[in-house]
Image 1 (tube, rainbow, N blue to C red):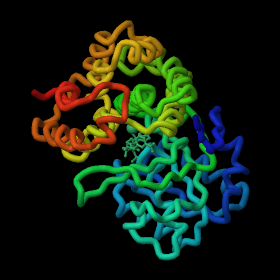
Image 2 (image 1 turned 120 degrees about the vertical axis):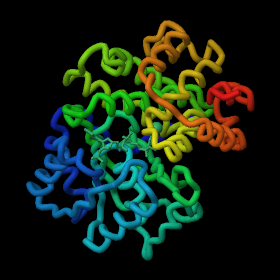
Image 3 (image 1 turned 90 degrees about the vertical axis):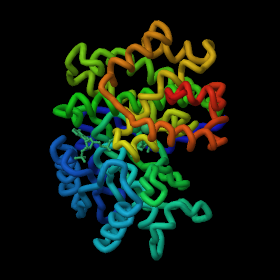
Image 4 (image 1 turned 135 degrees about the vertical axis):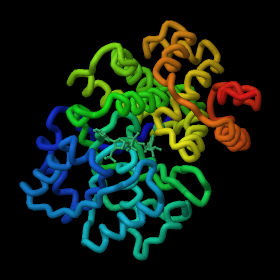
Length: 360
Ligand code: NAP
Ligand code: FE
């Protein structure tokens, strides 16, 4: 068995301020990579800039990373970082800016960075140091080496082959305060998918399973927040962030599975956000698992049985439509992907995949 999780995790209130010196001393000048507005609105950007200023580390902000970031955006971020003389990267935001930050850190290590380097598996995966400050509660990107980018030429999304783990992750639930309920629900279902897909992976072992099960137990009491039964409070925000980080640690060991593979096409074609796109297939995927495989995860997440889980997901995503053409394309792409089809303990053939996708 192998367990590799090289990220120093600080998960506590005001952690940016508490560990500012460590953050500011990752290099001489920081490239801060953010999305459009939430890094500012959540207060995370201000917290980071305050400590950088306090410890005398200059920075340059590359803002405006789009959802599901493209390779072109990453290249621009890296070029800006190099032009500004930055030697480390701080990703602030959801999975999109954090993934873009990691990929940019890889390009910034190259002498003459090219977009094609991102997917060149023969190159060394060295990168300049990265710090991650999540403001969503879904991807766990702050503790994974994964960077998922959009490839417009292939009309889909794909992880780069390089594993770029952040050096430190600064996790504070307060950055979720003020976020829209829909974003919290969608991203928390992404975390749920990570834990369930990881647990059901053929690569799962005693370490990754323990993390997935513990993360599901942490996540469980927040179900009522996610389905709108009760309003979130500060304690819920911390819990949801922690569950997301546990989920990231689990997929860092095993990778994801069929729901994520299907989601990439659905997100690309029908612009359905990542967590929701995974959630649409999750319950039907878990339903295909043998009872001895699925019961521990359903129990840990607080669902009495598989039907209760299917009902809950249907309630949460009641209003979602995916076009039949997109579902067909998702099916035809994934059914040919032998690694995905054989990667989990869930028995998967063409008929089972059709049931998961919900087509005849
Ligand atoms: P996201 O794409 O980073 O952000 C979604 C939206 O939420 C954006 O509009 C963003 O606004 C907003 N937002 C972020 N934080 C907010 C806050 N605190 N309050 C209000 N709005 C906020 O969403 P995500 O689901 O976290 O990330 C999805 C991406 O991560 C996908 O590309 C997915 O493939 C990838 N992913 C990566 C991993 C991994 O291991 N690396 C795992 C799963 C998924 P702004 O633009 O203004 O910031
Ligand atoms: Fe995900």
